[in-house]
Image (tube, rainbow, N blue to C red; front, top):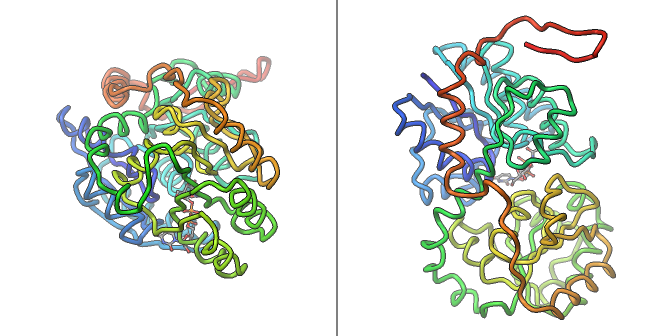
Length: 378
Ligand code: UD1
């Protein structure tokens, strides 16, 4: 089979790494197309280097822009790239604009799609990622779900059960494969951090960064907690903190802003943290695996399982709630969380097995719609 993976943003490189190795080991051809959504060395190339992923076969270099512009640039360039070669299956990952553009480009050429991380839903259609998730799942032939909740979401949206595979979480596989190496990383002494005596803060979602009030509230809540925090800055966050005049206040506080970190460094910093404050999806997943309590700077999440297992709490962008929630965590001993089912080192193997044993599902057939039951089937 000729399998093409389409990636573009930081978390997708992490999800690609174990699957790339498995696809090649199973004797398939694997072509990797990078849309160029993330382009700084720290946001992109460093992940390929550390996770030993071969350089992308093609980089479309779309760069930044509005959602419409970024997605449409990707779509037109991917259309040309996919049309010029024989492709048996396109794999897309997660929920970014690169995911949606990859799925649209493929389905318009009648190329079957496998969606890695299918079925997550936050219920918030105002998030670009939620739109990307729903639309990508709707046109995919193979849906690789990370949790049983994700399977239920897909079934309730009318997607045929035979296309849904509960394979587990590929982020977890990457983490578990790299944890021992990460543990040896010397980043803590470089940053003068002591084990379990600091928190990790990350903010990058537009709903937080692009609103002065929300970003200010988050920073105030963290400063009021009077605990050291390491704060790797996404490029957009760095720009807006500067624009809102918040950097001098941060400089005088216990928050330590740093450039985006490499994967192994960040894994080490997360694993030794006392708690994590984030609006990222992937970091909520990594926190539970590392037994680090997570406070999520959002009012909803697609990682429902982490809430159910008591590893995560939604704190929004409310300074008082953030401060009090940090305090609550500090009053309790370090926790140990249950590891979600199938969040292990065999996720890529399950995905590969699902692909290899379900080739008949890759045929794109006309839809049969049962108007009485309001269900559809390919
Ligand atoms: C994207 C994903 C999000 C994912 C995140 C991981 C979408 C809709 N969102 O958000 O789901 O959690 O990636 O990081 O796709 N920039 C740089 N250098 C870079 C990359 C970005 O300076 O290497 C700046 C640009 O100014 C850009 C901004 O960061 O405007 C945001 O980048 P963008 O590609 O829009 O998405 P993310 O916010 O990173």
